[in-house]
Length: 383
Ligand SMILES: [Zn+2]
Image 1 (tube, rainbow, N blue to C red):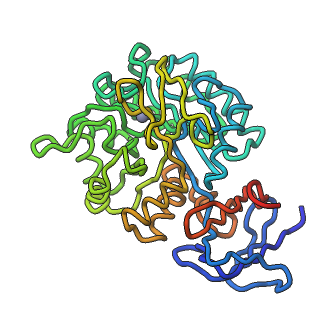
Image 2 (image 1 turned 30 degrees about the vertical axis):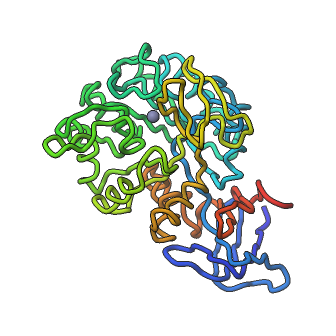
């Protein structure tokens, strides 16, 4: 395949840890073969008009989008539509997220995502299996009738995933530590969530290989002064990656700031926990047999229980920078580099660097996505 050269100027182009004003990308076979901070061809330059050019955003928790819930439509067609719905908000890589389901349904979801990746479905890099190995006390909107502990059949199914990254959310106190270790050893990335674990059990889970926590503060044992819980165990441990939903509803901004100060912003990951309403005009849907409606940006059932979010990644990034006041580059890393590192993909995606996949987005100063590129191909924006 021929090498493509793209030149950009008058922007904030995030290369490594700094912004460059201009850059030239050489792209071959979908990866950056070279990145220069000067312009190679003056005749063919894209004016960024002061906006950002940054790596494509990576979202490790996407239940749905574009009117589709993955749980309800486990198909490649659905994955295409969900990924497309999120592309307009800058997400070029995502993990479709299956909320608590029976093991045969998990097996089906794993097989479909495997096929989608084999067919190079844009944006799909793995699967997030959220439950059913979780706690009834912290179930959130999940259907507790399917909850169980990890058993041999579940392990066999989880280990059957071949083509991408499998992220598993479980409650450490509801499962055997040996099973957590075994799945970690098999390459499954494990995150603690929907968990009422006390501090000691949470630490035992981390020692067994749990690498992260799922939607910090939400559906987990809180930080109490005599019982620091899963929140305390995660915030004291700098090696733990922390997924956080910055929609202004799931986490109070002060609680978000305190968490980042306690842990350090490194390894925070912006996630959406997006529902079908994201990228759709339809703001009502069914989830686990419940009617969910988006009211003032919040997805909730008739009893007021939060049910995922109506958040998109560009808005999460904007919230991090404009509302929380996080340094721009650090906030961008929370949506790009840190999730890539969490998934073990930091040498493939999440940074504009030589030999990484040429996934990047152009986004203006109000965080409106102007265009998105996957593997060097423009997949969203004006032709
Ligand atoms: Zn959840």
